[in-house]
Image (tube, rainbow, N blue to C red; front, side):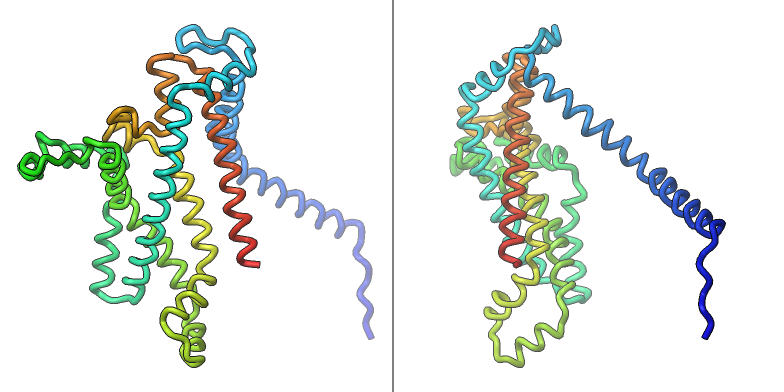
Length: 303
């Protein structure tokens, strides 16, 4: 029987050099991304943290540390509580509507056919439009002067943005129109990842459609649901363009989102970047906690 000889020193050095080259090549590939993240995330985050603990008027700049005054002013701002409540309310409604509609549309067009492909494309087209552009489009649609629905609105005395509830649900309609197709695609990818053998086994066991959906589809779709929930909650908590363009925070300051409050404190009225940065840090911490709780909840259900 032939016994392999132990590797020589030269062979070991060649393997080590090859490993080092691979390591350096990996760092070379990762460097552009690291620079991008540092320039567009880490540096602005450090600057915001610095601003949040400093007296930092818009026009004069840094005037020294004043922690925790900015956070006290942020929490005591007259619109802070109402903006948080409104943002949470909007987030809950938008998340529920988008997830239900996204899943329903995905199940409706799950089978591949010419008609279903046309329906998929029809629902996905609005996703190609920027949110600011879509908001301007709906601003014209909701206008009592320029809208093609203006005669009907005048006849019935109805305005899409004239009351707090009307403004909220009109904005939700815009968001559903804009994002339903996007979430449909995400759900569709998850549904198509479920093996047909699983459904066949469920039918052989006598499971009804509702039982199959509840006991088979939803559990196997949990990773996709986790992703879509995190995306939807994060996007809704950071809502800005739709309210800034459609409602300007009205009527009666009833549709001021948290991000809109940050913008207002920084560039309108107070012109105080320190207080605005403090609100931003509060929002960031809340987002991290909420997303961590969501992921933990989905992992607990999966286990």
